[in-house]
Length: 90
Image (cartoon, rainbow, N blue to C red):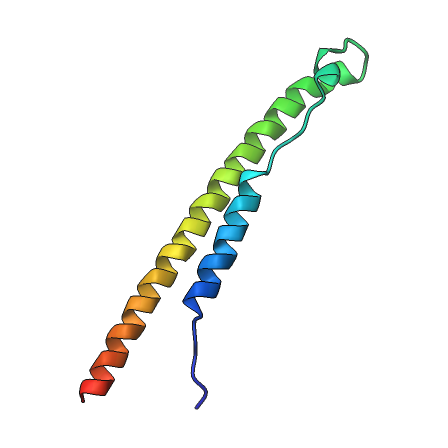
């Protein structure tokens, strides 16, 4: 039977990298584009604001999920150590 393994350090490293990238999620808007009175750009302003809100919500959800993954990884590591100690003592 093959063993199932979790490399805790690798999980933490990768989720840290994911979180650092998630923080960078944004909608770069040129100031000129937001200040222009030219059509069709004026009709895009409300949409850009909505897109910005959705991206912020996506980033929040993504960071929350990353935190959950890290927490579950830590819990799995503790459970694995506990089971390993129980097996050794038997």
